[in-house]
Amino acid sequence: MKPIIKNYVEEEISPFSTLRTILLFGRNVSTYKFALADTLLQSPANSTLSYKDLRDSFLKSLYKHYIINPNQYQAGSNSITRAFDQFSLDNDWDKVVPIAEKNIYNNVFDAFHNVGGSSIKKEHILFEHDQDNRQIILTDKLHQIIETSDIAIQLTKENQSRWAVVEEAWKNKLSPNLLVYDNDKNIYSVVQGQKRVNLRSAVDVLIPYQHGRCFYCNKKLNVNAKSSENDFPDVDHVIPFSAFNNQIFTDKINSNVIWNLVIACQECNRGNNGKFNTPPDKYYFEKLINRNILFTQEHKHSLKNTILMSLGASNHQQVRQKMSIFQSYINLINGWKPQIIHVS
Image 1 (cartoon, rainbow, N blue to C red):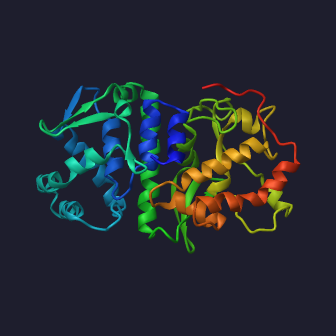
Image 2: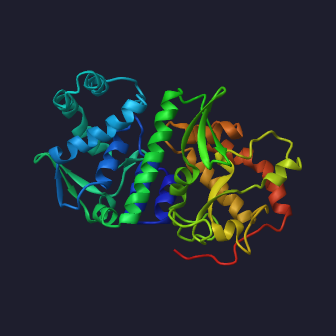
Image 3: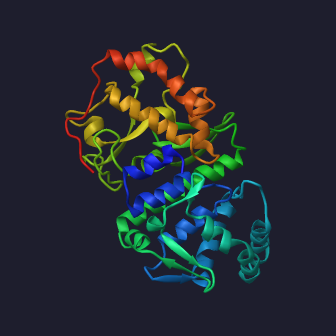
């Protein structure tokens, strides 16, 4: 596993972190990974699930996305998409199943835990594949997720958000993509030329990289909290708008793109002792650089592309180099930091 991803994994060892790692850094050759994650998160907490138990839920989750956005495969169409197309015409699900069964089992189950060029360690996996008995065996790790309803709901949202980003990236041919944040709607859009396609909430897009915690004080965030509550997740511009509006930086870098955005608790962002429009302490700027470098380890979709394109970089070394233009500014100021740091 690449050192950058390994560091992310070791920040928080938990079943929830394991699934987030898979969703963020597992390979995206097709969206099978997201369909299987969706199925597992909605599964009963049984000790085993047979192929048949998983089959219809998996395929229907995949089909639900396919009919809205056919771009579910990096290479384009395949036998399953053609079966889906036929189902749209004759409404005969029994024709879809035998075609799909030839494709979905071994590769999907065996590849699910592959991350960053290697596999999740056995003690952290969510299920074992029992090919001889045509079933998967759920581990205690997966049971912990399924049985913790609020976490399962949040991870389902994150999975759907991730899925939307990947399929829109493929739809728009990857390279022209730029994700731009809309302050008023709190939503990301894929931009290609003059066209915008709205994606998920910016919170759902970004919060997995922070293990569900505030970027500044490390407090556990609650996506269901009211905006007045301290653990409500806000979107924060790390380098504030004022620095760009006052033309402190001459380089034309869009401050409203993902490289400069994090999720913060309400208390840190706008509480009595909050950050508001203040630049952060240099520790948090370094943390932002490392978070952006983490994006570059993703597998071929627009979050990685957005970081590189918005900073004019082509690799993770250049991300650090490009962000160094802010370093003298950060070093000169007495930057903001939270009064209380929450320990994991």
